[in-house]
Structures are given as structure tokens and as C-alpha cells.
Length: 313
Image (cartoon, rainbow, N blue to C red; front, side):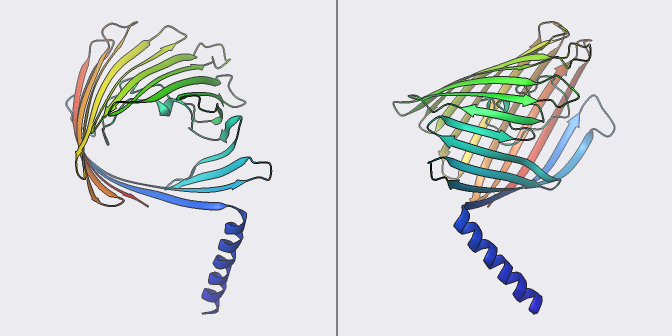
């Protein structure tokens, strides 16, 4: 009983101090997946079912200094431990974000609206270029009449010179009955400095129209390596409809290739339906078909079905 009283007192004291020091917000998500897939090129381990459980907790502390600066500290927890940390310093000059792990501009690319698609095949470029899993410095200018400009720098560490810099320009505006958003992202990763030319250049362009209950997004993504070994590109078209109460229906199609290896080809299509069971709880069913032809002309195909239960707290 004494231990319970001491613990309760400590929690109350912590809550009081935290409340006086800053505004605290705690949110979380829990994702359960049942995946059934079939890779026609593999008769062994890459055919069958998979059950996957992911959890994520995000905690943020925010306060305003005497000089008017807005400070926000946040970190996330997942089943493997801490997954991200960041500090935002915001004012009239814009917002400066200092963060670790993967928290760059590539993840902001407009590409797909489908809830959860899955493929055991490796498309090379994927939906868009990747950020480095490293320390990130990001600066966001104040929005100007719907125009947002961002830049980031990611340090690859003391063992590599393969740092990454990226730039994002995004414009949003209201139109009759909806909105429009245009986006451009340019990203460059330097060579590692070990005598190899492993650096890459990537870009993403997207245009999104939202009218009433329909959202349509068209985007193109490219990635090339300094060795000239590949020059990937893909085009994505996705549509999302939310006109049925509690139901969201979405679909996308992707077509990708390699200008350096004309035999390489990747195609993927997916359709998904998401149902809101209750506030904070959704269920979705997604069906995905993927097909890849390697630079050597070898073709593989897989089909997958994903059932996802997601709780948001």
C-alpha cells in the first residue's frame, strides 16, 4: 500500500511540474496487420501469410519563451525502443527543426492514398526517393500566400561524406468546391568519399486536386546514381473517395522503368477500402498486384491482400 501511495504521489508531482513547465501531449497508434501474399517466382518462404503488430507513441512538450519563441520537443517510442527525437524552434523567421533518424523531406512526397499496400518484390526506386537514417537539420520559411519552402541537411556521420541536402517547394490554394496543391522536391546525396561514386540525385513532382469528396493526385519520381548504373523513374496516379459516411475508398497505379536498363520495368496497382468502426478505430482491406522485370529480363509477379486494424489514441 505504501508503494502505491508513493508512486501515486510521484505521478501527481510530475504532472504538476510538467503542466507548469510546458504543454504536454501524448498520442499513440497501434497497427495490426494480417498479410496474405503469393510471389509466383518463389515456391518457398516468400509465399504464405504474415501477422504483424506495430505500436507507436509520440510525446511532445511545448512552451513559449519570454521573447516569443515557440519551443517544441518531441520523441517517439515503438516496439524496438525510441524511434525519433526532434526539437522545433519557431518564430517570425520560420521553423528550425533538429531531429535524428529518418525525418527528412522525401517522406513528404505526394504519392499514394492507399491505406496499406505490400509487395515482396523490390521495385528499386519504390514510391519515391529515401531520406538518410541520420541526423537532420530542417528549416521551413514562413508560408507566403500559400507557398511553403523547406530545406534540409542530413549528416551521414564521421565514416562517410555521403551527406544529403534537399529542397521542397509547395503551393496550396482553394478553388471552387475544393483545393489544389502542387509540390516539387529535389534531393542530392554526395559520394561517400571512399573512392566510389555512390551518390544519388532524386526528384519528386506532384499535383493534387480535391473537389468535394474526391481527391486525385498525379506524381512523378526519379532517382539516378553517379555511377550511371541506373536512372529510375516512375509515374503514379491515385484516387481517393470519401463520399460514403464512415468509408474511404482509394486506388493507385504505378508504372516505373530505368532509362539505363530498358529491360527493367515495374508496375504496381492497388485498391483499398477503409471503414471507421468507431472514433479512433478503423479497419481497412487492401489488395495489391506487383510485377517487376529485371534488367536481365527475368519477370516476377506477386499478389497480396492486407487486413489492417488501426487504433489511434
